[in-house]
Amino acid sequence: MATIDRGDPNGLLDGLTPDRALLAELRRRLAVDAQSAGLLDVAYRTMDTPVGTLLLAATPAGLVRVAYPNEDHDAVLTTLAERVSPRVLAAPARLDAAAREIDEYFAGARTHFDLPLDLQLTGGFRRQVIEHLTDIGYGRRESYAAVAAAVGNPRAVRAVGSACAHNPLPVVIPCHRVVRSDGSIGQYVGGIEAKTTLLTLEAA
Image 1 (cartoon, rainbow, N blue to C red):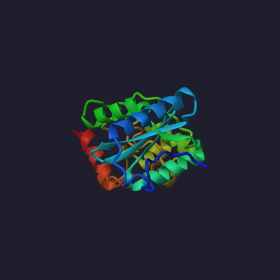
Image 2 (image 1 turned 135 degrees about the vertical axis):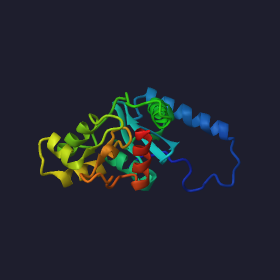
Image 3 (image 1 turned 60 degrees about the horizontal axis):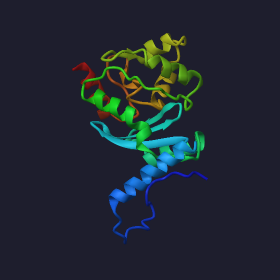
């Protein structure tokens, strides 16, 4: 059974007035103790950005998931518990570097992410596509057809679109830089508005 820490989802503490600072400190100590004991397989946190509240999750190997609000953060955590490990805990400290770099990106101060990544949630052709996306530089765009050709399967244009739609690390791995051959921006896991925001940021 997954041991995902989501606070107090059943409202058992609704009638109490706990010291928020004390609760925060207890959660922090729990995360530290779990990590020290080797029991923290997936750490997560959320952060506010110009494209909505993002969920960040990391294993000891690196950042494993970035999720948009429309992906349903609870569902994403459940999937992580099923596919990676049931030992999932809110532990923001492990995600400090990722959050800092994402903040810098949205502030226009970073054009390349320098984070360890864990790509265990993708494989096969999709992983080939995901790995190629990191070669598309800041402010550049490639068509789905160009990406298909670059990974050695020029006919797999739709499969490239599917790979982008299932990118486990949007923003950090830039599937937003993949557009249609006619120049229109195409679909995006975070929604068209989010994709437009990212492309506009990089164009500036």
